[in-house]
Length: 225
Image (cartoon, rainbow, N blue to C red; front, side, top):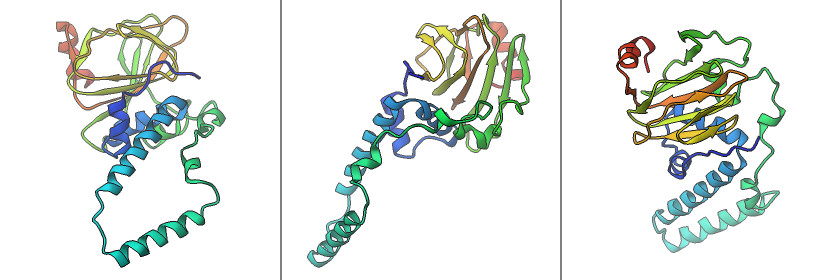
């Protein structure tokens, strides 16, 4: 899997700082499982954050500073490998996962098995599962039949959508398995699912969708998005 659409750098910095909601972080981590490019970018962001944090530490008196340096040196000598190895790109767990297993970051919300999912009808050819909220954000799984067009919409806030199976096309390009749509309120689009197999994706939203059409707006309270 070689994703072509990635997490925005600002999202990666927020993730490195622990500033994403649990729902947003679950979608970001699902992408990170399959995207070596974003794992490297996240490691860089964590490194920069660590440097900035160290620069904000208070200046210690000379004896304490010497003791701190000694402790740091002993800790480093005790490592079996150089510190840089911590940020080496590992073989992602996703490559070894059972085909019926959901991505690990999603399992606390939706369970472990694809076969055990209980989809809720949303519209003709569209089904959804909504996860219980642990913050103010919404986390959903969507399954949309091939050749379906979503209503034209923008976003009341930020949205992270990770494609798990199938594909869709919109104004931003073609999104297939592993691709991430990192969207904000400036984006208006109309996803159209590709022929072949249903498009299954997981999405986290921190605000409601904004539909252009009156019918979609009228039905929005029933869908809850």
